[in-house]
Image 1 (cartoon, rainbow, N blue to C red):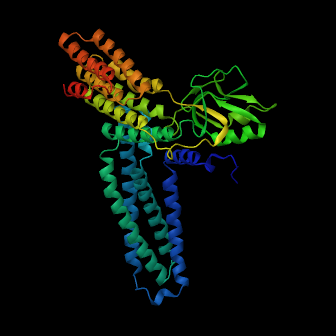
Image 2: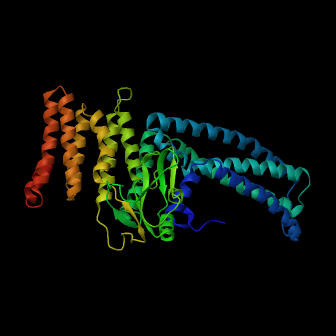
Length: 444
């Protein structure tokens, strides 16, 4: 029986659990295999219902022939599907970033296709053995015939959908779209619950007060069960300050949390609410999505690939994500504080900008088209009106401009980037007091 503090008892924990299930390729095929075997034996029950007088007569040879064809073809298709999936995963890792592999593996259409092919193969084998051993009467034989036609129709429809998906699976554009979707979901969840439903803690807090809780393993914080922390804080009559957000690399010297108040307790009771893994996950870690997108753009800017168009595409994606992050919230949309004995720091806009733009600005400094597009992106983000985002955009604009001036050799290219950077400064400084002049600058 699940415990009260089990992550599955809260929506965030359920999403985290389901995302881990999606990364396991064997889960859906196993479920379809069990369903297939169950369907074969369920058809046997039709012989006990007295419906043999109602069902039309079906010859045993026709059913066996149909099942034999399906068994032979499904094994070939399943093998082909696995080969195509492995090639798509290799393409995503080589062309985009290895951090996108969990998203490619978790593609629903691909997993459903593989599950359908393997499930149909198991169904045909089990049904063929059952029919050859006279397990079915007339009603059961007709039920198996009907199920075989139904499975065949499902396989055909699934195969058509899968061929359309596998043609794009692993391609850089499709991978960018998948990473953007994952990053968008993580950013939106954190935007609605900036502190995961807990109190707000300082972003860079000191842990000198209270008892520091350390991790027993080395890795990344993948999930923080705030509900479990609240329950244990109530039991210990203390307050827990989370110091390691999801995505933080922790070791035995990096505290996970700081406990203030309460009596003597085992630190494992607090540390067990933190899931530590060798790899980061997208669900509670919005910065990881931005970092993965930045890695895709950075790889495209490498001399071996030399694809600035992909970097420009990623920059546009970043603008969409930061626009979502800074979009205003209605009062009823913001998550309420439900965990009053836990405090969690919010995400800093400077950290988000560093994850998103630093690598692109560094490796794309010598390409005029990338440098100009980057300055236009900073200008668009500065026009949101939020002070923290304006400051971050202007800082990164200056840094990108300095890098371009040091790398570029043609003065015309440097002047073009300077004009783009100057437009950012002018637009921000003008503010809302001169909308007409501001519009003229934007049109220029």
